[in-house]
Length: 260
Image (cartoon, rainbow, N blue to C red; front, side):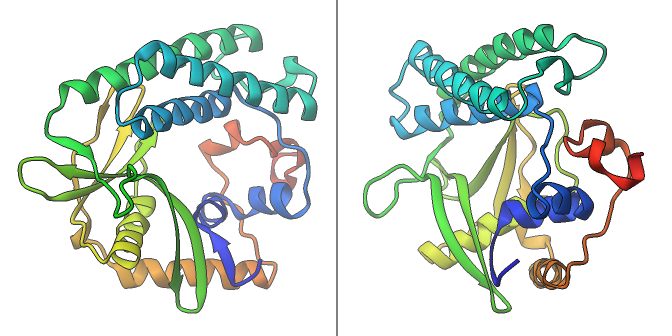
């Protein structure tokens, strides 16, 4: 790994270094999962709706979901055509799981739009060039390491003018530590020179955001050191395993020495 990296790579290494090594370094095939395909499609639909200035109707947003779903399914089929071996949640058959996730994704897109249209407090921030602050690319430096990423959404409170960073999550679990929100806050300060105190995760399965998190109470310097250490370990080829419940849903588990 070079001194130029991304937020997604760093969080992947932190989640499980061995999984990162097997998939990203050794390039071993990762088993597809319906929840990943669903998550990408939901995110694409929500992003398209936000970038439309929230003028896109539900049906058109769902069409974005459908196009994204088909594209992700095609990629997964090309890499791993035996669908019967794809990962699923619980005891479902793969096809039943995909049908449920497709229908559930369409519903979550509609719920995302419904919730946000009813909420007159938060609106996406308008960037200096007049664009909506959705999927904003950034590059910030931590201790000589350039970290690249994309901010899901920068929101503005229409009553107070306060800013809030939002990360859209289609999974069922809220991150224990809000790494991405912390990095988003740093990115807004670096790119726009604006201070953000609050952040939250919009959980599409729940159809609403989590409670607002005060990002000013978190140790930013520690997070920066953590990022740099992850890069240093990767540069030395030290990818540490993190065995646990996540192994059941890991796409490269069949290649993992700890799972054989």
